Length: 193
Image 1: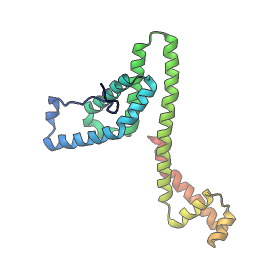
Image 2: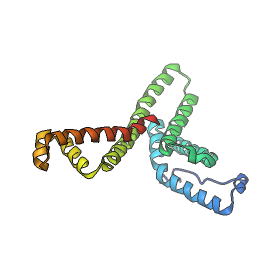
Image 3: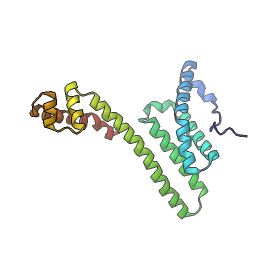
Image 4: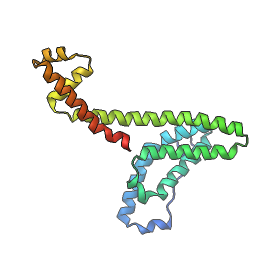
């Protein structure tokens, strides 16, 4: 009887692993283990939701981690490990569904369904990353500018901010303008990757 709480088989290591020193190999295995612990369940959930089959989902997630292990020497080149893992899982599911689907209409329906689900997943990840960037940009503002920006964000108008902080309306306007420019500059990199 299978244990449903353990979605994957044990991953074995090959003789090719000998090219790494013992300490490098151990560090790599610890890193890989941390990645596995962090992403195995969300990837399994995605694969299972798309395939509706636990065994196939386990196989797909196993294949994803095997692929990750194969490219372990290039992990540092990935811009977003999370995006890479979810996209690779999606692609493996699509490959599986293409293999089992012989009807073109069914393939098209599956494709449209998958695109919708994956776009939602990617959008959620991008939104989370964007919110983190935005919060970092706000936190990096000078103290007075940050207070003024946050008051504006809470719905205060220029006059209310000026009265509350005992500064001129012109200062409020300049500080908000500078804050917006600074935030735009800091988060502009978000859209470039």
